[in-house]
Image: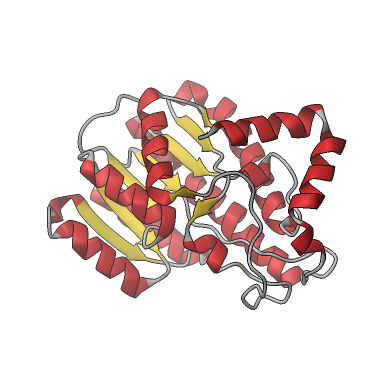
Length: 268
């Protein structure tokens, strides 16, 4: 799509972390924003901060995106307001727990938030994106490309997200709808501090990580730059790209390195 000032962007998970960083960066670049988050108080506060600068360019809807009827109402309200140029599926959750110990309700919750909700929201918004020649931006993860100990549900959801949207990309290409898949590694955002444990309660142990932990602001700038270039996929740093290649070219070596680096997960 052609990127113009005041492109209308809908950002999910917009009240904190990467979603809020994306909202600030997009606002600074002159875009109109529709902010969505389940935390009504935080969302109202963040929206008010931007509206104090220009109230015409910000609106917000408090919503748990796993609520199907609520999601449908959101789509109706967005359609009633006019055009939608960009949908950024950013909202997500994760867990830190061994696959064999994790209760199915946790795996279902991760899949509902990280796969089902963005898929359903995108399908509902396709007519609007078709009219505008718009773009869907999905915040995936390197965990969707390669296994990470203690994240079986999260890896599964992000892999499913990537596969669904790669298929959708081919199916809507002739309709003028773009798809940008973003594959960050480790970011300093609340998604990890709010990670679920094996039973759905907060995870009891600190996360393991590899590579440099980047800021949400760093990531947001790269996402918007990739969108403006018309990129189809974004591996934001060399580490992420090299790790994905290692998994494909030398999977046994990757597993040995991962077990060493994420040993705390095996003992949790």
